[in-house]
Image 1 (tube, rainbow, N blue to C red):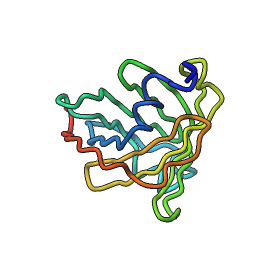
Image 2 (cartoon, rainbow, N blue to C red; image 1 turned 90 degrees about the vertical axis):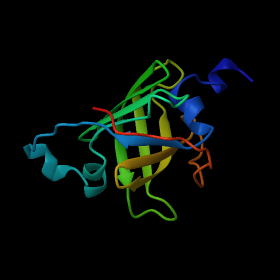
Image 3 (cartoon, one colour; image 1 turned 135 degrees about the vertical axis):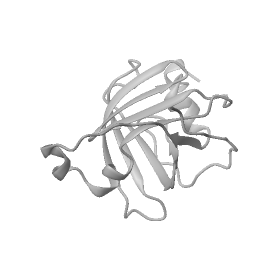
Image 4 (cartoon, rainbow, N blue to C red; image 1 turned 90 degrees about the horizontal axis):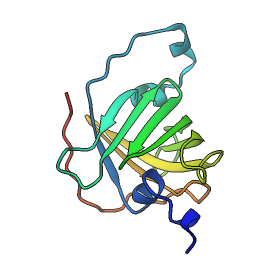
Length: 145
């Protein structure tokens, strides 16, 4: 398998299973742009992190339709589209504008579930098919301060 097919960080790690994030402390102010943001995207606004005890070090910061992702030291910036009416799971499409060279210009397709203070995301390798379901990978998450 070529190195470009074995992407480090977010794409590879997240495609292997379920990424569970807990709500971090996020301060958000309303702006005129908020009216144009879909309710699905508004629901996941803020910063989400994995717990300190997790083998995966991930942080997702949703700011409007933009997302900044850091997974095990790999940084990604993209624009998101959410469909909370998709079945069987709501979906996210992440158009990656900044990140490792092999991911730029590609779209990471994901399914997600917002469960109170937990956000579960299963993401495909950029340019690949969307995951069909959440992998059963146990992860513990807590909110960060």
